[in-house]
Image (cartoon, rainbow, N blue to C red):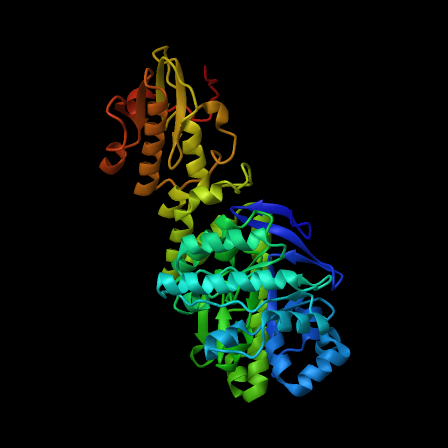
Length: 505
Ligand SMILES: [Zn+2]
C-alpha cells in the first residue's frame, strides 16, 4: 500500500485522489496540474500561481539550479520554497531531460537526489533515461535496465520525508512499459511518472501515448499515483485522466506563450490568426486580440501565459467535476471531436476497454451514447459479460418495443442498442438507463447483436425471438441462426410502452 495516496472517487480509470506530501505539509488533490517553473525565466511568479490560479504543486529542475553557481548557492542557503516564493509542494526533475538532449550530464542519481533533499525538494527524481519512441527494442531494454538501476540507487539514498519519483520508461513497447511499471511499483519509491511521452504528444500520436500509459498502468498497482510527464496541453487532460493519470505538468503554458500561441481545449491557435478570443478568463475579458498583439515581448508573453494557465486549470476542474459526476468518457468523447489525432487517442483508449472496465464504477449518473465509439465503452463490455451469466428459459421475446399481448412467450426482455438484451427488471439500473439517439448508428446495432449472441450462447436450450426495428444486415449477420427474427410491429401491434413492467422468470 502507498499510504501517502488515497483515492476518493473514480470514473473510467480516472480518479480524484489525495496525495500527501509530508515534507511540504500539504495534501494535493489530484488530478493536479504542476506548472513548470524555469528558475532562469519566471513568466508568472510562483506566488501568483498559488494565489491566483490555485496551483498546489509545481515542478522545477534541480539540475538547472545545480549547474548555476548563483542559483545553487541561493537554493542551498534559503531553500527552494523561499527562493521561489511558493508554499505548496515542489517537485524537482533531475536532469534526465538534459541527458536525453545532450547525451551526458555531470551528476549521478545519488548526487542529484542528495542535492534535491538539501535544497528542500518535496518530491525528488533520480536520473533515469527517457528513451524516445521507436528505438530498437534492444536499446529500449538496455536503457530500461539503467533506469531500473537508478531506481535501486534512489532507494539507497536517505531522503527523509522527501518523496521520490520512480519513472516508468520503455519507449513505444507496451510490454516493456508494463514490466517497467511492475519494477517501479516493487520499489519503495512513491510517485510514478510515465516518461518520454513528450515526442509522442508533440507528434500528435495520442494513440501511441495511450498504449504506453496503458502498459505502464498494467504494471503499476491501482494505488500508485501516476504522473504523465510533459503532458501540458489542456486538450488532452480528459483523455489522460481517463487512463488513470493523476499529475500533469505544464511547460506548455510558458513555452507556447513565448511563441505567440494561445491554448484552447480544442487545440492551439496563433495569436496572429485570432480575430476573436474564445475565452472569458480575466486576460481575455480585458483584452482584444489587437491589444494582445500590440503588447510587446515579455508583456505579451506574460498575458498569453496567464490565459494559457487559466484555460488549463479550468479544464482540470472540468475533468474533476466529470469524474465526480461520472461522465468523464462523455468529456473525452467531446474532446476527441476536436482533432483526428484525439479521436485516435480515444479509439486507442477503447481498445483497452477491458482494462478500464476493472476500475470503472458499476453505477454512475448517466450514460450518453454520443457516437459510434460509445458502443465500445467499458459499460457495454461489462453488460455483455453479464449476458454470459444471465439465465433465460422457455420461449423468450427480445424486443425493442413493448410487452406483447397473449401468452406466447415465457418472458419478454428489452433490447437497447448498443447493450443488447436485458430483463425488464434491470431497466432502471446503470448503464441500461442510457440516453441513446433515436437515429441509431450501425456500431450500436452491431454491439446489440453481439449481446443477443452472448445471451443465446449462454442459454442454448432457450428459444429466442428478436423483434427489431430494422437492423442493418451487418448487425443481423451477428445474430445466431437459432434466433428467430421478426419485424418489431409484428409482435407489438398496440405499441405498448417499453416501460411497462414485466418481471422475468
Ligand atoms: Zn483567456
